[in-house]
Length: 92
Image (cartoon, rainbow, N blue to C red):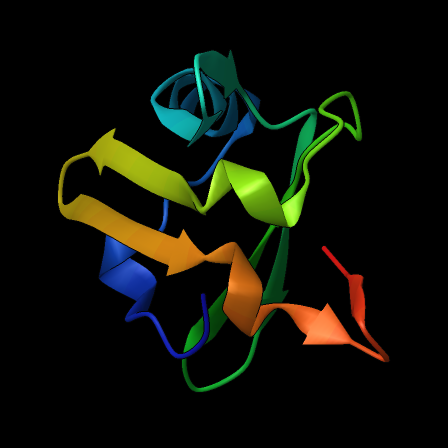
């Protein structure tokens, strides 16, 4: 996520862990939490969510959903896997 206001981004290890616990990536019937969250600060803050590569996703899975429920951040977005092809392969 790029360009978040500094006030929306948690600070400290405890707040980072809470954000990790409240963030999910769901595909089919599997749900993953990030293994790390990295921040790049500037005038705004860029947040990089790092998920494990545990799911064997295929184009047949159709979509994945990212959800974050950590006030003031409330985000839910579905991504179509067919739009994530590069060179004919699914690239995540």
